[in-house]
Length: 232
Ligand code: IPE
Ligand code: IPE
Ligand code: MG
Image (cartoon, rainbow, N blue to C red; front, side, top):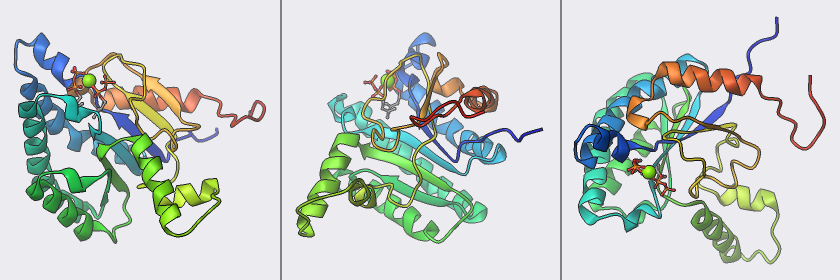
């Protein structure tokens, strides 16, 4: 029997918190809180099923267009999550990385991010990458500007890759987007060039291990050709 193919790197677009809360007659913040409460168990389930690198979309560069009180709530939830989760990362020896421009975040949240990244940077039991104030187009522009700053006049794909927030990570193999939307919303466009895309109607706060296994089974059934021919 051949072994089930498992993605090395999963990207998750955690969507549907607002609609989940609305269905329950609750404010959007209720959905965001529940969404953060399940994060830990989903990352654990990924590790249990052999996925060691997980990138989660927490806040996009476009999410600044939301009402300020929702943005404040999201940052507050994230700050609390990171404070609590740091201990778990330390005991699991798992590394936290951040993709995105955290210089624009409130000082205390930025400091919490930096603390977590620094405290876990040498761990090798997998990577938990949070896309925070992240936008793929901005990331690519940032990478190109860094190369220009280094005096490059002609650049290669490898050069760009080396300046991305994810320069130490492999490409994304599988994207999971919850809530029924079928788009990438500026999520790791470069890194997803050959990713398999899985969409589920389940809202993020209801996502769980069973849902993850469905996505992993679907992934294992895909034939990844990378422009070549059928690979049996
Ligand atoms: C995802 O849920 C969380 C973030 C974008 C931060 P949404 O807040 O987008 O929920 P919906 O899509 O409005 O239901
Ligand atoms: C994508 O969800 C961003 C995150 C999950 C953080 P959105 O809810 O912001 O995406 P759109 O607006 O539906 O494309
Ligand atoms: Mg949404």
